[in-house]
Length: 349
Image (cartoon, rainbow, N blue to C red; front, side, top):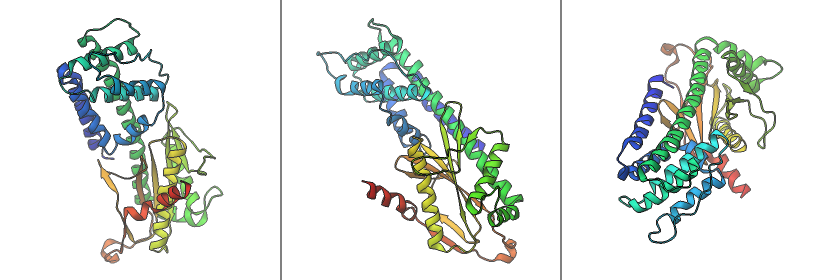
């Protein structure tokens, strides 16, 4: 991923959060709504948001309940939230998102509801029992919830982009210097593996040489994946590798790609991760035109709330451009890529 594009994504995130942090109190719910809508529809952050929303924490459920009761005027105040109990970074982020979303659902200019809900959240976050003035309560939400959400997303953006950038370096190194070597690995094997699995070993070796901590999880509900990176917080980054041989026809290529996206999706689901990476070694001289989404230079497929990033490594023995002529192109639609996932989902329902 281009570092300048990554920096722009970070800049826009910071700008959106700053607007929420500095707006007048009366505009605070509207600013939160703008932030919530932007994050929910962003091609990178939306997967993280869906993961936060999927958490079934008691705190989060109670905070969400404020939307149903907080609009009561002249009646009972919103129910007590108790005290903040999140014990991990992910749990804290889920609470921060739930708070920001609840505030975003307050009707504009409804200062009475804003005062009640913000005071309840202030007491929940600080442990105070007193009724705080609106300035103080909103300040607490900005300092804890909005800042906490920003820090979580910024950190995850780093983790994702570091991994994507690492894989792009591997792609470049392989295509520039190791095409013949990787064809030999696919044919002759490596470390007791052959074909696809041998190429995965080469990828593992490269990642290890970059001093990235990783483990190989031998068992999950969906089988064995090729590489799982663990971050310091215990989260996992899922990678899987596929190999398309030179003689593969269109139906074989489509099946390989569909199976690959399907497997990464299943691994992400098994490990409750929002996204994963599919690395495809292409020995065929045919050009593959996949119908994928693209943002900030990254290509990806979204399936069932998961985002699967796609990296294509060409290892074919091609003549020079002046001698090769026009390459055959294979068009592969999104329907082709998701067919396996949808068929299995229907079969398991």
